[in-house]
Length: 102
Image 1 (tube, rainbow, N blue to C red):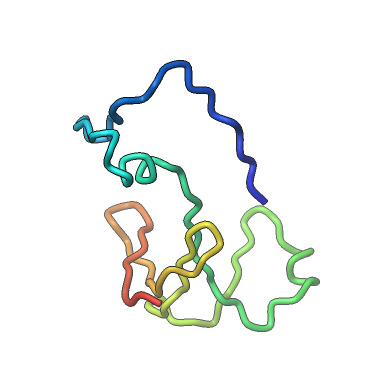
Image 2: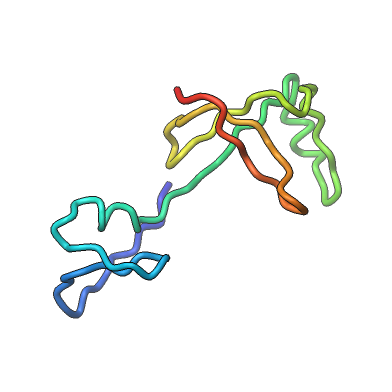
């Protein structure tokens, strides 16, 4: 399921540089965890979707979910259901707004 690659550390780590540029102390246990990558996915229900429908998919196919655009979707992190969310438009990008935790 995961394509984990071993990390080679050539020198001892004493502090971690975050994406914002601020350094965190190595004794902060969240300093290491907060930089780990994770897989975020949203589950869109498509009732009555069959294997035949799957086999018919092609570039440009549109799948009708039969749900209104503001319907909640499940948001998953590394295969664990995290919360309910809804899709939102942010300028010209698609976003996900968290609506309630599980």
